[in-house]
Amino acid sequence: MFNQILVVCTGNICRSPMSEYLFKRVRPDLHISSAGIAGLTGYPADERAILSMDRLSIDMHAHVAQKLNREHLIKADLVLVMDLQQQKYIEQNWPFTKGKVFRLGHWHNMDIADPFQQDQQFFYNTCQLIQDCVDDWVKYL
Image 1 (cartoon, rainbow, N blue to C red):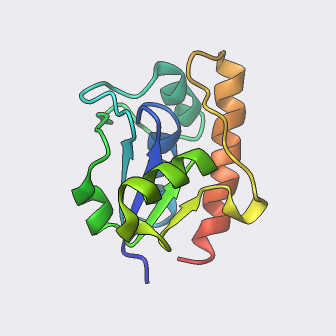
Image 2: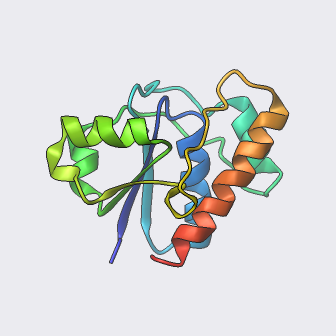
């Protein structure tokens, strides 16, 4: 059973917070958190990510970015990343994570491109893709 789920992206201001808040909406009984490999510690979510989530009636204004660390990975039962490169990075730097790190797009065998510095439509599309992937994972939680 996955009680502690950690979602990871690069800066923890776009993809992983959107994923975190989408998971929290459908599985409020689980502990869902997010972090960034190069986390922009202390920063709020990207304004375009916030607008994308607003369209789904999810308020993400309270999000504060944090940098991924060993303690996050120890606590997590499942770690979801955005691409294969992030998965390899985590597994190489923290070998104990092998077997619990998967791509958010695992069930579609795809990566989720970083919308950082892209236009609002790219963010909307990324948010929809993340929502589809979260829905796929919920079946297995």
